Image (cartoon, rainbow, N blue to C red):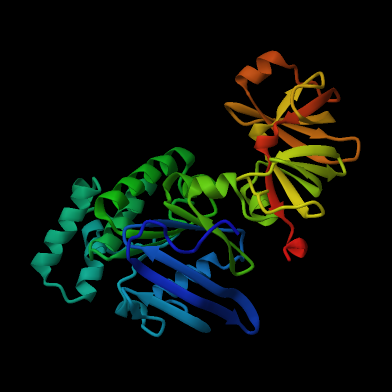
Length: 377
């Protein structure tokens, strides 16, 4: 795997999860997770429903106890500490604000639980409301606020104690697209200004890749890949990651020959050529069983053959308009589905008529190669 659970920044780790597992009645929800999070780092955890990402977050918060493994915060073992004994506040998907309290009383709540004096907690709460643009709403009830305003109240309530680590459980999922984009910018700016580590669980690929320093993708309770957003996006470590991220075409292939820097591949859709360098092929030899991954935006669609080294004849079966681009859905004679992402310029040069035959083409350097698990050894 070309990823690491350890940050590459050189910063001292704030959080260390070592062999952390959690089972419920014999069902393993999280299995042997190793992960280090640096001070001031923004880490996003993604994965399909039931992959273990929320359970991992709850164990960090102290809301679940690991069945095994170690959780350290600032070098101190915290796995047996109650939530109120560790400085790891959480911003919930539901926000969990108190409707019977005013905005400023919601923000003061954590300080009151810590026995901070009235004058001091009012000063700190007022300061945080001002920092988040809510000074004029201090005396309002939370049900009188918009969704974005309630989101900022929840952030202020968590940050007023000035923790080293903030946990966020899909905090933007209830917001509309425009407001979600705005809040992404606010969260990123705030995190950078404060230097607080954020651990952010989300289903949204765009949120994770836009905000995080590192992305952790989980599958079946384990870390499937961990790395910088660009690394994970362009170099998925497994077929699962490539499928989860979407926008990838995956061909089962066998390496039939190696010729210098090129690999010759055999697939049910024909023979293709791939670079043997940094895109995953450096250690491959003839006979290796692999998955060939080609992103939809790296494939071109032409009416005639010969545009690129790799090409396959296919028929357009549908198109999907998604704003600035169109996804062309095609099918080979053998039934293989191929998705090609086309931009406005592409559409000026080619007419997408359902039922028409095209050639899907790409260059050897656009291939990413992933060794299949059963062939790993």
